[in-house]
Length: 398
Image (tube, rainbow, N blue to C red; front, side, top):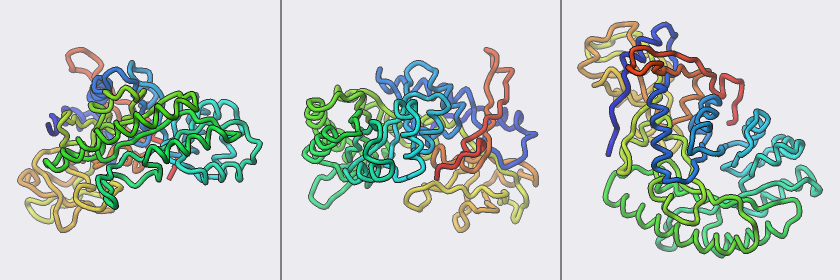
């Protein structure tokens, strides 16, 4: 499959014409359909929302209120503390933390300790927590990040460089040590399959690696979960991402899945076999000059995504159709030239809508997103709601 049909871009442009560029816009109808599609693909398992892929608290809260969703996967302990204080009761921190301030905040309030599960992959991280807040701290809930990359041969690593805990022996040893350690409660296990969830189906070789990875992860996960359940009462076994819900929900040892990017559907998810990408999030830029008849220069817009630098991390012109970045310039901090036949009809002041390569990273550039949603059955009427991003709420978590 590939990218599906864009929403009614003329309507998005018309209803936000009074908003000054650059600005972010979300098609609310597509966002809701994407949420329903994630639940369908999860096959009955609850979907935990990856907050870093949304970064709009109101959209996270509204999605959690929908059937099939449960809990947040946060990306910063300071963010987790903030969300707990805002009423969230199920927060899984996806990455280890070394923040003294956030750790002190965590143990200062009982409701935070009850809501937040901290990610670990070594005893050093537990040592750091003890050294920061003292060894007499109340129990801290922790989850072990089990590396889910594929290592088909010694020295060959296919996947993200995450946890040093890869083999069942390593995971079981760490679980045993945590279970015996005062001040910590082993609450869960996480298996994030980056090379499956985050890698488009671009070739037969990629599909082969994905199939091998799913089998490998399933075998290791079964052995690890069986052993760890003998020493700890696990609350959850987390797995998956937007790109792997379809295969991970079949594993009987998995109790929940995680997704977030599938709500916005950025360009990195345009080439997966299991689903069709329906873009919901865009940002609008204005044409400020015409250096050539078939080139229109846009103000700002150089919002490159994180990861290995390359073309796949650059934003993509989405509307009007038929535009592309100028290869020798790409997307710039203060100007982004686009070219194509349709550029001949663009005039100074016209708007071009772009798609980000990743999901929530777009929101680091804007204080708000403007959500356009149909308010009647025939689509003739729509509302525009302006919602603050994390940035708009004065929150920056790195």
